[in-house]
Amino acid sequence: MKRYLSKLAGGVAVCAIMTGAAGAVSAADSSVEVLHWWTSGGEASALNVLKEDLESNGVAWKDMPVAGGGGEQAMTVLRARVTAGNAPTAVQMLGFDIQDWAAEGALADLNRVAAKEGWDEVVPAALQRFAKHDGKWISAPVNVHSTNWVWANKKIFDELGIAQPASWDELVAALDKIKGAGYTAVAHGGQPWQDATIFDAVVMSVGGPEFYKKAFVDLDPDALGSDQMKEAFDRMATLRSYVDDNFSGRDWNLASAMVIEGKAGVQFMGDWAKGEFLKAGQKPEEDFLCFRFPGTQGTVTFNSDQFAMFSVGEEGQAAQVKLASSIMAPSFQSAFNVVKGSVPARTDISDEAFDACGKKGMKELSEANASGKLYGSMAHGHAAPAAVKNGIYDVVTAHFNGEFDSETAVEELVSAVEVAQ
Ligand code: GAL
Image (tube, rainbow, N blue to C red):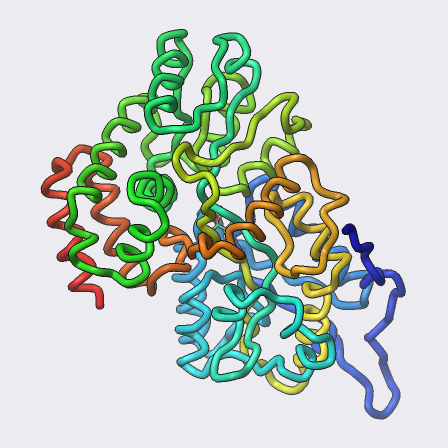
């Protein structure tokens, strides 16, 4: 059943800035400062939906962009801002990082607006686990992304007669064909978070959801040190042989551009990549294909971008609550995610406005949730705390760059995770 969206959050422009009168609200009351890492073309277009929505609600937007996919640099800047006693109003944040800031007592209490708007009833438990701390709502979830996707150039697939690969062997055969035809088979940016994004999918493809959970959620040393994990590293080494010579350090959106421009066959990336294809005017199933990393069909590794709200003085609270309320509005959840490539963070949003990949993403997310095959992405901070994640990044990247073989990588992984806990 398709439910239609109720009210338009930005439908009525409310001017919150009053001057002169007693009880007046100052300009500071009606602005929010937002720290985020959405600087690529697709990301910026999506963020614009939020900016415009707020501005139509009389709330000015102070932009604080910190480039760098996955948000590592943004988190460093945030730490400096908070240490200096100057926290932004809201910060784009992932999973365990939100809980860490909440545990430090730095986040606001959104329970009033959450209760008024019934967030408990519409936000899935997998997201509430990160958006609430000690019974308090502390952040507003914008979306659900998932990391086990392949983005393929349809023209190259058609030209070479490649069917959508459904297993590891079929994937390797497809990559061989693409490489053999003179294209770059895998468009990749050699940055730790991108290497780790592929590793999420590869580990899932080797061992399935139970193994993934044992390794990345339970941090079980037996799983981390297993033959299956060695197989996962072997597969990473295989994939490494399909990237071009200039992959090192490349930003993820430039890797997407290689597929968009027909220079490369596929990119393994979360569905924020779709935002780049759309921004370039491409259409799913006509210009590009989206399918699950072969061997992970039926399972979803997710992350959810949330805006963690920092404690602000009384004068900043009204605008902060408006920001939270705009983010949670059904109309916004649809409009934003259509552009971003993700799916809504609410369960009551129609898929009507979404394209073929978006519809597939929404359906697969709810099926994976129902069948217990929905797991937090390790690479994007939803499986284990930041220290563990960073330890895993180091090993995965060093191995991907040929610093050691798969056997050593497994040993390094076990000790990196142990040290980080
Ligand atoms: C992810 C984030 C996405 C996207 C991506 C690349 O961590 O969840 O929204 O921005 O980084 O920047």
